Length: 454
Image 1 (cartoon, rainbow, N blue to C red):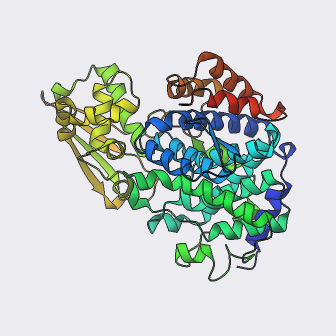
Image 2: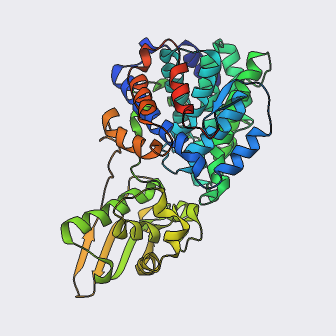
Image 3: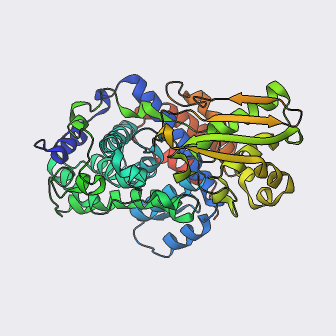
């Protein structure tokens, strides 16, 4: 293609300001940040959190940004790596389709760089929106990469984090383009890793890589300035020359901003299981459905679904978060659905094992291969011969029915109450609600660190 995509993205990133962003986009950006920050605070207590904590703390170095688990200040890259991994470890991360990226990748990088730079809230929002737009537009152009097995939320996320970091560091368009190029050399992620700790840390790698790329570019490091669109550039390599309308990255930039396609999860498990759990909860409420009434649960899904939700018989917490049978067990048995619903104790509970044994997955190749645009068909066959059919098209909090800041607050509180006191919670809520008015984010950071293990 002839359009200089890498340079033109860099121009838009370096020039964006709060004034360029519509009010509704500013408001939703703050809601997404609230969701992500809650997960960062909770994540150290999830699987692998202790390992990441030990890893980054052994590195030492400049005291630039807060590791919220311990209150220790680390180099920006290390803090962002850990905090992004913590956020992903909850499996609360939001998703957007068809670009298949997440705001949880961007928020930890923005927090780390904003803290070190003493950035204003307005600059934080501008950097977040620019970083998210970068990764989302790349994700849209590179949908074939997802089909080929790449985890685009981390692959495009490295470049999105570089864009956000470059904006906060005040890099001009040329140095921002070099940052994007350096990040492209680090961009990766593998869909097959779902259900493992390697999947969780991929988001941390993206935050670290993006900040590293921006710092190198700031100091004069360079890369190919057509790295995205060149014949041997990133797009063609990951898509096997099947890039989807890359010119629209620039033509459609901010029209509208893609953050409005991000849906916030209600339950701490894979996005593709949200409506399954909601269906089970709805039938408990409307039909009084109980596991002992069920003969079989047959679920028809498309060919994409089992490439992500691939653990029918989970053995640990992460596999349970990517298990269709366990999702139905959670929905039919749990009154409060949180991290404990996917714990080893639940996995081994005979009641959960029984419900999982009732679930049968039918993969419909004739439904095509796509993360979205298809509807599962769920048939509950009861022991009395009745059958209940459900075809849930959407789950709560998903486009176009997005959560407001106030609607996201209960999820935030669920994540942070075990670590943060009410005063700190109120500070975070207040500062985020008026983030565009803050001169710096120091009070917000201090509140988040108040629940650290000293």
